[in-house]
Length: 72
Image 1 (cartoon, rainbow, N blue to C red):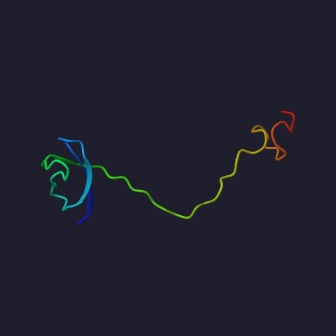
Image 2 (cartoon, rainbow, N blue to C red):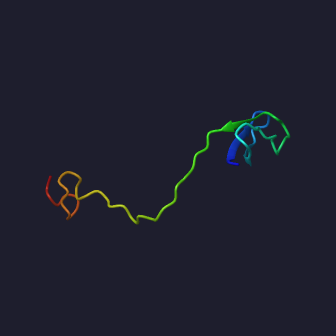
Image 3 (cartoon, one colour):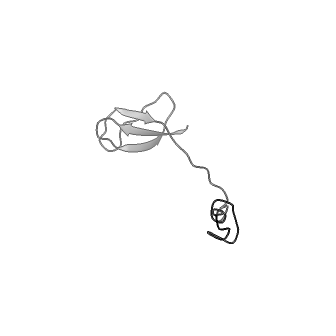
């Protein structure tokens, strides 16, 4: 059974529950049977890529000596 996210229409409590796709659980906070299924979002983990490279030089020519080095 998949985990689904729900939002209670009566008290506004957000919760997750293991239910079949055709089932709707009661709200664990107020007991209402008016919980609506929400769209779920998920995150994907991975290795830390480390620091990202910054902009090159002055931003105009990319001179590696830094801003103003190329006199543009």
